[in-house]
Structures are given as C-alpha cells and as structure tokens.
Length: 84
Image (cartoon, rainbow, N blue to C red; front, side):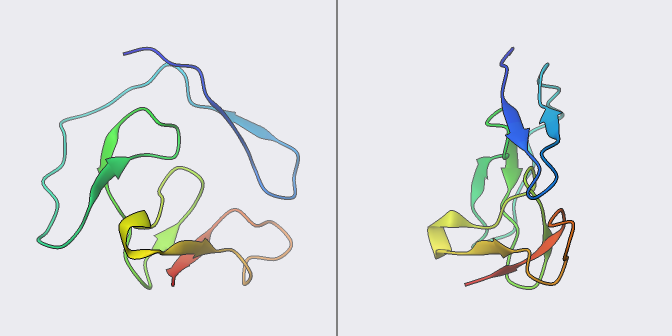
C-alpha cells in the first residue's frame, strides 16, 4: 500500500512524511480497544486509551470521543496524553 500523507507538527511548522506506508502485522487489540488507522491513514493500530501517551501518529480512541491533550507539552506540542 502506498500513500502520501503529510502531518504538520503542532506549533513547529515541521512536517513528517508518512510515505511510504510500512505496516507490520495487524495488531490484536485488547477487548474494548478499537482497531483504527494510524494518524497517517496507512496502517491499522490499536487506539490509545485514557492516560496513555499519544501523538499525531499514535491516536486516541475516536469511538470513545477521546482526544490527544498536548497542553502539558508546551511549547513543543509533540507528545500528549489521551483524555476525554
């Protein structure tokens, strides 16, 4: 699978290139944890849960209305914690 997706790092103006997609074995997620596409839209991954670290690629569980809270990573805004 080939795709070209660019993700802007918050606050820095830098871009991370997600291409080419390099997906490993599809993960087996724990019960109650969603299997979703990563932030690049390339590979299936297990969604991060409340209190777990997150970033633009490792996203929080959208099916549980979670988001990545970057507020404690000022001024970089690169690593956050899943919250709802």
